Image 1 (cartoon, rainbow, N blue to C red):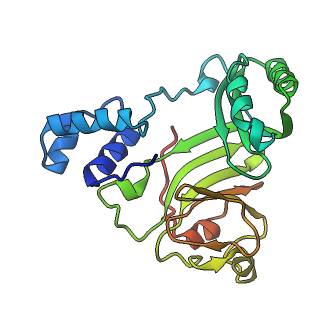
Image 2 (image 1 turned 120 degrees about the horizontal axis):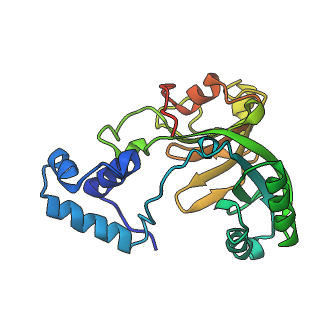
Length: 254
């Protein structure tokens, strides 16, 4: 069950996304003009509600004795998706599993190995679980930024890039929130392509709208606030980010 967030909740989440290790309740309280106790109580409530699910270290595995980080894009049936996602986490070397609601590639599995033979072993074990590996690639870098609508400038008219995964060979997967005044708002994907709002090499792989996960089709209409997952083999061009209202300001690598 979802919970309605107020401005204090949103600002807490934004601050924790920005720097959970060094942020403190008094620091957030000062910005919000409330007491530190209020902030601590709200954090507890957000944790109890399952909105804040945990606090995790962001590890650069390449700096850990040059380990390799790989992304496996897997297919499974909707009925088996959650079960296999949990089983995948038991495979030694798997550090993260992302479960998508619909479409192909509905399980994205991040794994780490000391060498290529480790990644081959992980691939075999995932296959034995019953997962179909559709694609895989080495992750070159990952970038994160707080969800801007929850920040102090949340009313900004510009879109917000919320996540980016850079794969070897120049491919990228970018998650971007559509701003209210973006050129692509209220436009179908078919029309967006015809109007050259989207580059020919760009593939929209998922659209998250509230609690709904939408499989993109030609007649799918983009709306303000949609969270769009964009894939491009040669990197997502700035013109595509402009279509969603992205600021194009650089984001700091994690």
